[in-house]
Image 1 (cartoon, helix red, strand yellow):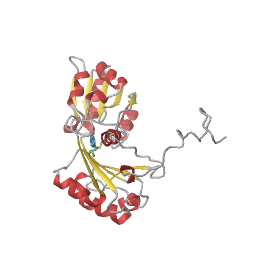
Image 2 (cartoon, rainbow, N blue to C red; image 1 turned 60 degrees about the vertical axis):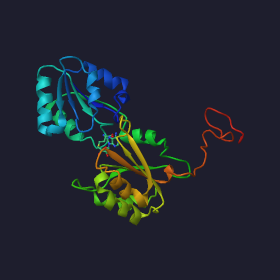
Image 3 (cartoon, helix red, strand yellow; image 1 turned 120 degrees about the horizontal axis):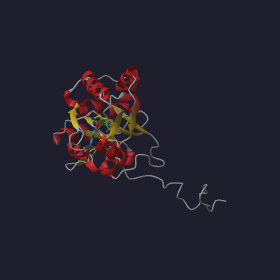
Image 4 (cartoon, rainbow, N blue to C red; image 1 turned 135 degrees about the vertical axis):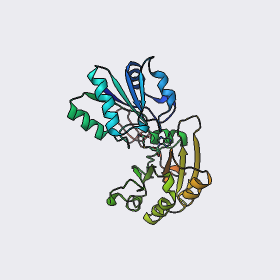
Length: 252
Ligand code: SAH
């Protein structure tokens, strides 16, 4: 059996209760060492075999799982944040299916949620944006052309950019060309929820400079949109005049 577990965005106590339990029961753990906080390995039991996938290929990961499986041992594949976001898990799922190896998935706190907490932000503010675009700038890894930053920027929604810190120069140009004003609020969150977390607030027009001035190259999210600004409408849900399934408002 293989459990894919989301490690959470950094802080060791941000893993789910289920994830921590699965780690404690595992015979073999393969963790994404480039981003998973090694403090999480403290949840494993003595004698657990630990592998760092940052130094491994997909084939090597599969071989570790296959041989553990052959001995009836349980593997936890520990991914940073939530495995569904840039986790390269589908290719693992498909290989496990082909090998007839059972697996399941335990969700985790993605770094985009960790960053919202660090910013004390609500990404979906009434009358500001009801949409969060999670994307990345094209670099060595391509992005489909129809998902270009320019075209996504045209929505003016909240945008969270993964894997793009080292591409901030071009990114800033594309965000502006796509339709965000230079004064649109933005932020860079470095190592959200880690002990050395840093939050830099800026604007779209100063995004690249903020990244450069602070020497940020990786493990950061760029967040853009008026949800980081001042204006918004209060929610209907908690408005005294608004009737809901659970509460009678003054509008009836
Ligand atoms: N599955 C992960 C994302 C993996 S892609 C998740 O759900 O968060 C790796 C990228 O995620 C990094 O380049 C960085 O852009 C972002 N990232 C991961 N952890 C982060 C953190 N704690 N703070 C800021 N960005 C983070």
